[in-house]
Image (tube, rainbow, N blue to C red):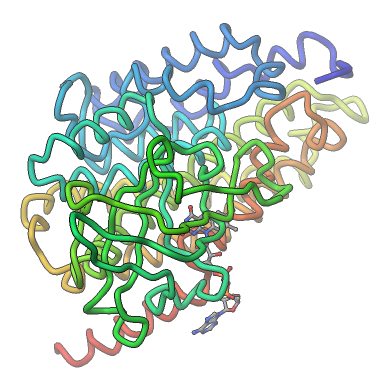
Length: 423
Ligand SMILES: Cc1cc2nc3c(=O)[nH]c(=O)nc-3n(C[C@H](O)[C@H](O)[C@H](O)COP(=O)(O)OP(=O)(O)OC[C@H]3O[C@@H](n4cnc5c(N)ncnc54)[C@H](O)[C@@H]3O)c2cc1C
């Protein structure tokens, strides 16, 4: 914020503490006392950091990648996998979604960068098989000492990700990887990339591998930043593998296993994206709700003008509460089945369609809700005096990350076919 337009009391009304207050009052009757205490703990950590960075000034000027170690030291990067070296907070899908909601209200673009690192954490957590090499990567990523990314999408293979072309070749002691990935969130800043490649382009399913590439000692792994103005605080890259060498000890999946890992990762990824979209909506909604109670026009709080109070705030509050409760229910069900999901084929995961449905719904709603809440704040909504522009930016890319709307609907339609066959 170069120039402050708002009076101090209006700006102060929209402080992070009050945004959390709006969220908490909505969750009061829904969360258990234990969950409320957990959320308040996370919020307390964010409030401390908010003061340290100088509130909105910090959000506008900082390099968010400098905050990874802070987040890692408090277990704020993910709550969905076990920490092999620490045991400080709750673990599970619900714990992860409450972490997302808190972190997205704090800063949605920072949480997007954390989320991409989590996508490299997940396969390492599930496939390290006790190897020291991968356990070290896992703890470094969880602690925020290292930044991770996931390399699936390629310049010529987007929605059709399975038919990838980046080539893997088995050599003595490991694999050599050649080819380009693109849209890799974090890759220009990342230390580690969980990369997928295939031994045979004609038979991707049974030859797909996944390995953990390290920029520090593998000169064949480099990245160039690409311009995505909507999320300009996040570094997204074209990721280049040129005779990149991944030792066997850093392979998370051999030929064919890579394909299973790809699909295993998509369900938690899509539930995670839905969670993050809902957190972004709480960020946008709380700002607009707070602003509309202090801003007066025509002698009235703008909340009292029906076009704002009813047609925007009440309408989107209802939709936001509904989708929040739906995802909480899904997370509870997922946690209850957690043990049953261990070792199950990713193609038999009962949450595949629900994850796609939630992702598709949340991605569309976050775009619409953010646009409406931003404009309920008039000029203030589009300035850098609040985090609204950061939320608006992530809301623009919500549909494309983790698979577009049509891909989610394709999965949905195939599931209906299977469902009918099973009757
Ligand atoms: C900001 C951002 C961050 C990203 N982060 C990552 C990351 O960290 N790692 C990573 O690997 N990837 C990442 N991606 C890539 C993302 O997953 C892809 O962009 C996405 O899967 C779509 O691929 P595409 O862009 O090539 O679009 P295309 O596949 O070319 O699709 C273009 C259009 O065609 C439609 N379409 C395609 N196939 C079908 C079909 N069969 N039926 C109906 N419609 C269809 C799509 O819905 C879309 O509307 C990121 C993308 C963005 C924009």
